[in-house]
Length: 148
Image (cartoon, rainbow, N blue to C red; front, side, top):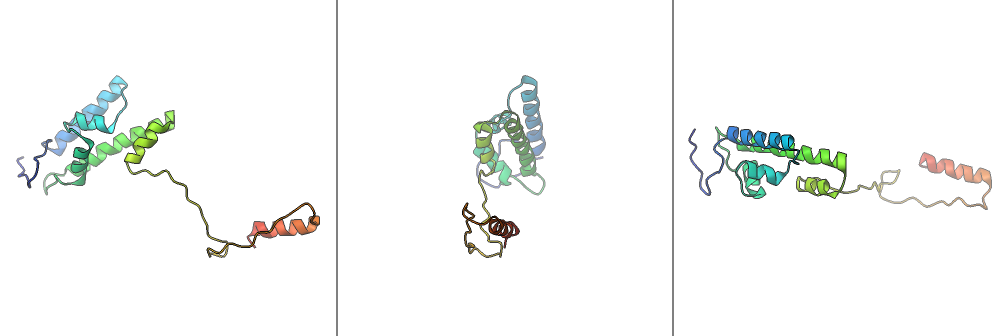
């Protein structure tokens, strides 16, 4: 299948099938040799010189009506991402966390600042102290628990 180049640099990989075969050989080789799967390793295994080149294939820039590299590339990168997830679960550590952030993962905390009445206005603060009558403290605590 001879696909005319749209201009720019010609693609390195002939077909999505060739890409998939090279990627599969890389994954099997890593498993056989006990070597971790990496994004850069995948790039080199399929004949690319950088992660940016892989991003170009993933973006669909080399896709045509007949030839779709982006799906094959996304699937292979999902396998790399899966391997980083496995390492995070098994080993922990910051290496897999850093790698997953390159896949768009976020490390953030979310805080709910909404009041019980649905507004963003804080309710007054009630303090229960040792000088209070026990029944009064119980009543205040009950109201706080109910959100009242």
